[in-house]
Length: 157
Image (cartoon, rainbow, N blue to C red; front, top):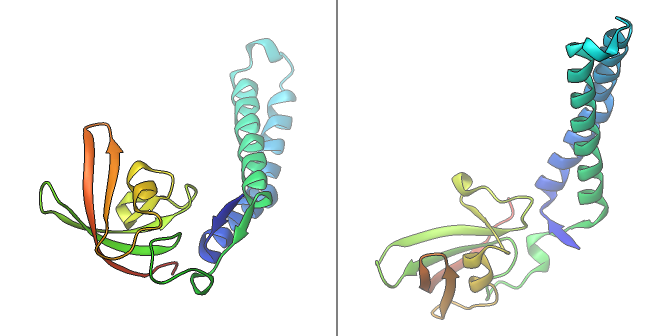
């Protein structure tokens, strides 16, 4: 079971609808056109259309599974005093003194440029359940990061 914000759930639903209603019919049309050229063994257009069809079907099935196994969760249903899904967390790396802020999200919403890290990432997992002032230790490829929680606020735009 994965939990998604309402915004991300709606984005995935819209992508799925677009793939089913717009992209897949176009792919089927391209495939029919390429097949009409007869000699399929030497038809690069046909092979490309088949590859596109496979990728499209694969993406549709993946998104359907994501939605089937996901539930929308709102920030109101989550604790405010500890780090949890959809929390915006401000923390300091104790080794470098660098302060950072990230929102903890499901793996399907992760976007480092937007300041969103997965709860399943080493840092996200280490922060989960911690309160302001506590130290989290995250095992990362370069070693162990010691992170002090400086602030927690609701995320989940």
